[in-house]
Length: 472
Length: 61
Figure (cartoon, rainbow over the protein chains, first blue to last red):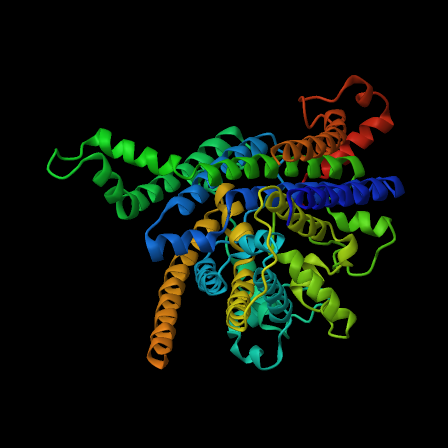
């Protein structure tokens, strides 16, 4: 594509988004709430594409070829986002809520980690790659979405797999009659197990509130993000970065490495991931401002959730039994894509409003007026803008083999996301940076799963190549 | 290409600046930013009720 054409398409995307924002705002000011999601989605897409922000690539580079650059960049991005998040929390404007903490996060992260290596991209990575024209990544997104929508509503024989304790606990929650909590594995997992787990933050474990200065900066940021992050980077340095650095700095037989050399090596490893770190800083600032803008509009319109706004606008279909829709108030990735599929399935006759995920928590509003969907759609747009302007946009068709891996990997990520109440963004990146220990547990599982996934994928590829050589 | 990117960033900054400004005024009026409500927002019983309503929105059920 010529430079002029690429420029044209980049500006055309911006123009369409401006028209949507301006047109809907002129129709009713409540649409500004959706436009906030829309424009922050563009920023997220641009940052993801610029920083090549993909957790799958990070772990593949680390475990398969020993290159830590991307993994280090993501860790730095988490720390920078954590700093912004601490500021937003301390001012009382954060929309973040910690998730229940237990072993489930490790298992969910493991399944997700295996899936993202099979698929060749995590949830956020697949989104920006879709924006770059990669149709294999689009299949991954579709697979994640369909799997989630099916998984959260599957009952029947799966009910026999539910432990009795979960069944009893779920039944005792007194959920509305429209939610058939006794029918559905995920429903009973959520109401019977997850909701009984403690909701923690590093600040609360130390006796502070998340909104206090000490809680936000010392508890959640310093002890919850910086300290464990720095220790993890030491591990990465010792196992993957140190040897190559020392080989260059200290040619054989000159002298033994001292503290200065080690610090220089540690610093060089961090600086090497400049582009991902810059993207992480921008993501952190954007996510903080996103929380701020949403909180301000909630005060302005006198609402706690976008569901009320949609109802006032006359859209009452697809609201949860609580009158809410998915409205995180910050960067999130997988839930809204599940809503697309849930909405389609419901329209086709599969009742999706009798489960907790859609019917009680998130709803399935029309994708055209779903706030978080505006963020996802514009995220594709933001990634496309950046890719077009950097000559990195290319329409890529999947092969049968890559499509199959995309479907399998996407399905595993979908299941992992629902078990962990989020993906690599919602359950790891955001939670870790906001001082939620369950984020680290999900990350622990994700690293383990990624390791197994990379090793399995390497074994599979080598086996297939050996067969091809033997046949030729 | 770099100019094009900067033009897009400026357009986006203008739009997002407007949205952030729009979101800031109610928070100043209710005292969420700046510690205490602006004088005009605190006068009159109706305004006080409104202020309390906004503050209650942030309380957990």
